[in-house]
Image 1 (cartoon, helix red, strand yellow):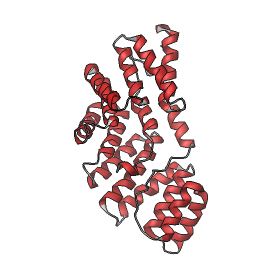
Image 2: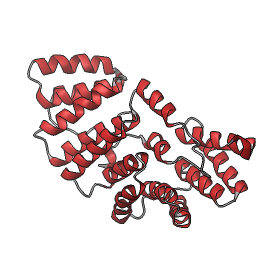
Image 3: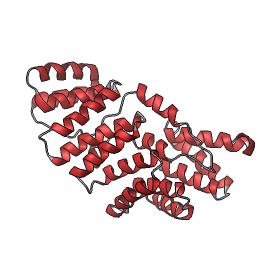
Image 4: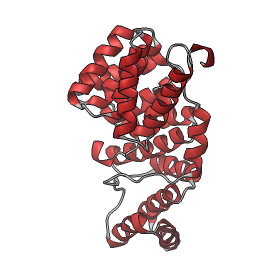
Amino acid sequence: MNSARPALLGALAALLLTAAAGTTWFALGCLEAEAASETLPLPPEIPRLAEGPQYDRCLAMLRTDPEDARAFAETWEAAGGGEGARHCAALALLASGEVERGAERLEQLARSSHGSAAARAAVFAQAGQAWMLLGNTGRAYAAATMALTLTPDDLDLLVDRGVALGSMGRYADALEDLNRAVTLDPNRAEPLIFRAAALRHLDRVDEALRDVEKALVLAPENAEALLERGILRQLMGNAAGAKADWERVVALAPDSPAADLAQQNLALNEAGPRRR
């Protein structure tokens, strides 16, 4: 499912890569409010529930004019467009900023669809990522769990559910999903980064550092990995190393959620212990 997964890693990372030295250094509510008012990025390849020229046209319109895509999908659905029309309409809601309505419709469609298990799982995954960005981690977890009943060895879904669990404070449960994800592909940086964050929250700092160091070998300029290593370095008393990592995050991805976290951490470090 990797090619069909929206590029939401940075925003999802911000939900789990939090808290350093006993201080919550990122206000989750800020991310929730921001996500609720923004459009959702569409995946590079949208999982297909139907075929035909109208479906192709509607999906193409999503990237250029979501409102037109929505109007087209609604007219098409009224004329008997079926699952293809309903899918395009739900995605148009996401793309135009009506994230909650879009997530609800995607869940309904995934439950009732006659598509393949992989396609239905991908639609559940889209719903789950939307719920995650809205801060509704319970719904995100439920959607990812439904998807995993259809495709139990999907690495991306395991990561998504692991992030949802971690954001609910269920770090041991998150670790189970992330262990499975790492076993499925030990050379993917993303599961290692999130597993490092879960291990850190479980006070297994040395293991977390090993994971994030491996992730940085695989992806040396991964902002989330550098953010996490900076948090771990701070916890281990290496303030200079933490500062270097967070400054690198800001330089590499200045407009990302990871950079926002890094800048807040740098500011708190600069303020000193009394301000934390």
